[in-house]
Length: 411
Image (cartoon, rainbow, N blue to C red; front, side):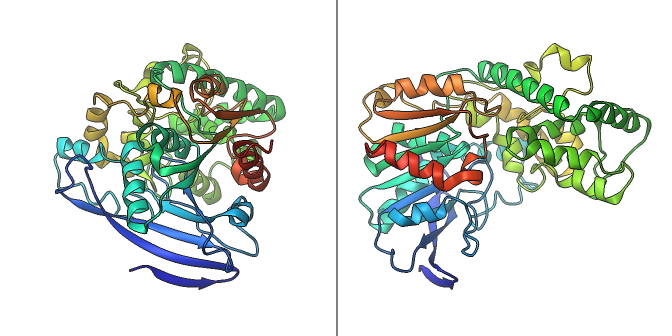
């Protein structure tokens, strides 16, 4: 039964839905998907806007007022009530569970059911259970991949579709995706060292220290040079360069440095991210550890070059929290993933849609996004260099307002 919750300035209703683990076999195992309905106290009858968050493997944001968070919520609640899904395997939805008792093959088979296609199928069951004829969707980053899957597989369930930093390529091999994102990452790294030139030598010194000593983080993980390189993932966000600099300026032997290094990236908290990150790009092909294979040769000769939003097989050794899924991850790298998108359906799309495409986004290549924008009938793209990948978090009200205006013909 739905549970109403009272909080400052917001009317909340909490839902739990039982859905099949495998939508192709609905008679089999079932899992729980949690959703939180968020409305202004006087806006409980407004149409639904479903928020699909970034990831994979991250739950929906937790809403507050005074201050309002997330940043786009006030603008959304002016026209909608918002349904925030904890996508399957995240937050208050059924966790991926203790897979330790399963064989690697059983683990891998289980984990194939956590991509965008399954999330969209969950949303459609939830829509039917709530008795909603159609609703709008807002997808941030990986959430945008889910929105394009929705437009491909269940457009009848949609009124409007909004994308922020997450308009994915259609039919593009992941190797071509990573070729582009590595180029963007290297550009970001160059700009970072131009801003903080002393940090290049700092990174070089840290690499030498990590080669000479067995440096342990609070989790017990060994801090390796390749793990240090992953801090470049921060550089896709508007505040990422500053965050990285302030981490690097800490004394290397200090508890603060070791703690901040331990929690700088989300892999231990959200193992689904590492396990399925490459799979979320797979539109009908194998991934085969593409980020590892496509690593540019200059990384081999310059330890100060940082990597970006890329996942590597060695992470399942360097991160203890990922080690139980090591063999399953290798099996998934050779899994023949089915297509996520239907170009023919997208060419005939009738759902009003608008997308914020960030021109210099190192996570979702803007040239590929704009190609998709040209494929989807009626989709209005907004190509901008005003924002980084976290634009919705940094300036959400302005961005969402423009997308709504674009989709409704007011801009």
